[in-house]
Length: 118
Length: 114
Image 1: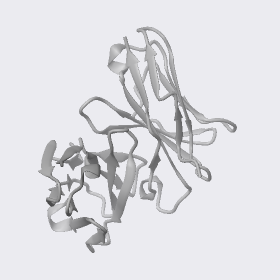
Image 2: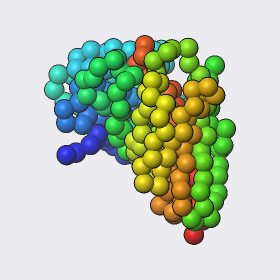
Image 3: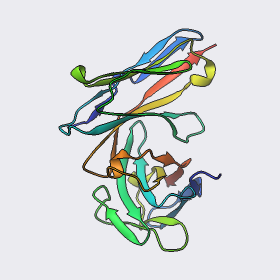
């Protein structure tokens, strides 16, 4: 049973380039979440998606960041025109459909994608 | 306002010592969930425990135990007879009945010295 798969594990970009991070949820999970971990900080929520739907993007920066979870294929977190402040670890998590709302579910996290912007 | 506070930034203990990691949370929701995750040096986050707000029973799993105190809004984690493999960053997190996100503390970095 593969867990949550994220790639690439490490990504280096120059300022102004685009970064694309991919996440395949755990088998049987239909909910995907993206979190960002800045150095010396905890994880901060970015976005919550189900297949073909963005459910909650309240944590996403208003500009340059977008996320999708298509009917087929992995979820993608896209960062356009990266800046140095985007350097962070980006974690994807997934959960099954559960009762009590998204907060009741245990999140299974991937190993993270570490973005470095030069 | 920060919803989860882990006041201990770094802790070092000698192998076989017991260690307690503190977690204090803040919420107005009457139904909520508390979690602990472990982040070893390899970077992934490993789920350790979930506790809902209606279950105040303490839990023990091997060398790990958790003390949930609603009166003090705390959910502390104790490792008994620590081992080098316990060295990691430990995160406490809160989720609420309404809402879709986990609120993570800033983590406690535990180093177990052989």
